[in-house]
Structure formats: C-alpha cells, structure tokens
Image (tube, rainbow, N blue to C red; front, side):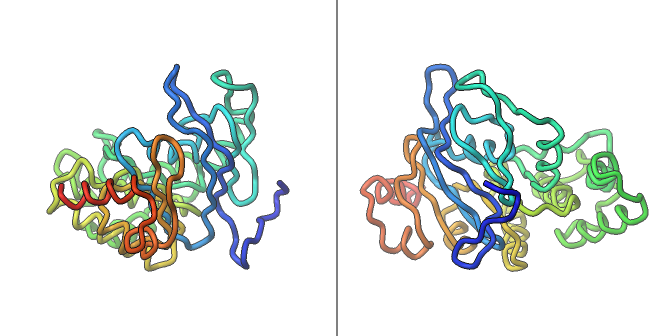
Length: 265
C-alpha cells in the first residue's frame, strides 16, 4: 500500500485492518478480522465478553501487536517485523508519529493524579508534539469547555466524579487533534447516571463528523451514534452493517441471542 490515502467509494480510508490474528499463549482471541473506517465514520464494535473487541481496538494503535495481518492508518502500513508471538513494532519513530494521530480513551481514566485536569490535557501536545504553551493552554481550556468541565480545569482528578474524569480523558485525547478517536468501553466503569454525560459528549463528537471506533456494551447508544456496527463472536466478524441492518434486520442466530440477552440486562 502506498503513502497516498486509498479512496473507497469516494471516501478516504483512515483505518484499515487486514486479516488480524492475535493470540495470548494458547488462547486465540482474533482469528482473521478485516475492516475499514472511512473519514467521518463512526464504527461500533459489539459482542460478548471475550469476543475480541478490546483486543481488536488495541491492535489499531499497537498497544497489542497482531501475530498476523496488517494495520494501515491513512494508507500507511504500520511496520512490523518477525512472525507469530515474536512479531513486534519495526519502526519506533513511525509508531510514535502514528499514535499522535490516534486519540485513545480507556475504561479507566488513566489521568495523572499529581497533575491538575488542565495539566493532564496539556501534557501530550506540549511534551510529544512540542507545541507552544499559550496555544496549547487555550485549546485545552476550549476542549474542557466542550466536554462540560471547563470549571474543573484547576482541580485534581481525585476531586472529580468518575464521569468528570472520563470527560477529562476525552478532552486530553482531543487535544492532540487526532484523525481517529478510539473508545474502549468508555462508560463501563461508571454508574449509569454518570455515563450519560460521557455518552452525550461522544454523540457531540460524532455529530461533528469525527472518525471514531468504539467498543461499547450499550446497544441503544451503538444504534444511535454509529454509521456501521460490527458484531464479533469468538474472534471473527459474525455480522456487520448499518445499525438498522444489525439491530433491525438481524440475520445471525448468535447476534439475535446476544441482543436478546443485552435487552434483558
């Protein structure tokens, strides 16, 4: 694949995964998964625990290195060397540059306890991207306003609710101006009422046309926010399509079973 961004149906492909396999010891978690995310597209990964959703998401930014298969960001294939369990990142400079285009929000908030919320949000643009402090601070404050916690800029993470901490984590990811936002079950550690505000922020980002790939257990949210939904089962894509296709015209018996269980949770 060349450096030029491939065009599929007139849309720029921002993320492409091809035949991704991943094992942990003898446990084969991903068994050959391929999909693409176009610019401005929101893709939800759904499936039961252990289906490989989070592992697949972590393969995009190489927090997990696939044992087989390729990942390309903006048409650029990430360099990997070796085979199987010995496979590793081949070019540290390339992966640092590519990671700076990928904003990641985890289940746990991963904020630095000794830094204020504002300092947490400013850290990567200052340290990694080496941008000007005044510009970064203005942008960080704007991001905190966007996610609804501008008044908490000078507070420490321990002084925030879980929902506020997760919104701070989203602001931090946004402040690197990522091409793609990756969300790994961003509300699973939150009480439902705290999760609502986080989901509202993610919906706002989707409405802005941001490219996002998210792992979620909230089927109503996946249906409302996604352009494309992928159902993983035992390490493979069992079914995928638009929300209307996946939730309203389900073909797979396994997906029907999963959705019935989710509806009765």
